[in-house]
Length: 330
Image (cartoon, rainbow, N blue to C red):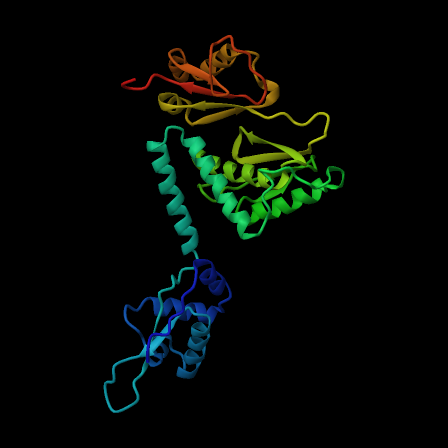
């Protein structure tokens, strides 16, 4: 008999594993511990079960494509026995382990080699969101004028759907305590809760911003706000585009090289209401809060919205400020 294995995608494998009974999962795990095909009789002896019970469970696993069976070489006059094997990871947490290993390796590489690790990881997050949304056949409205009538767009209903999608991504989103047009993210599956990785949080932010860009462009505006006391908590505010006083964007400061090391991260955010009037005031404020960073700021150059800036450059809420310390050899 030829090999009867089933070709399947990882998503199909996970779906099949999720539907297993406890008996099927226990037997799959037992088979996975064998380097060579194992017989029904051998499995029954190991598990202390009747052969017919094991055979029935095996047929269920074979039916969903999680085990393979083939005839073993004959060792006597009797009919050759069937051997069962599997190439499916038996540990149901293997997908989560793979995700953690992959993102940890990716973030480590970006931190060591990318010119702007935070911007790079947000772009990766945006592309990840594209793939997830396309899997769910969500139309992309980010590059074209949206034809949905603004006065009939149910913004609260839209936010509810987006919240469910973000829950599926592992972001543990909940309604805002007082603002019905806001959603609060309380988890990030790419980092340890007790010591959140700043780049992992940027990855989540890239996903979130792309979700709203793809689904709300033309009918709503949005802004994000990080809780300075709890970096895992990210609030997204959604507003109709014709609202007279939409919530302004936060001001972001991006650190490079030694500035990032001294600041303890690649980016910090200031609420719109706390944005200083000039770049000089902002730099002075940062230096007072962190003297080690202040010494680097004294010899750094700056960009405001990607343009060279002096200390007397005026700032508006929502601007991006880049801090560029002297680089070795340059």
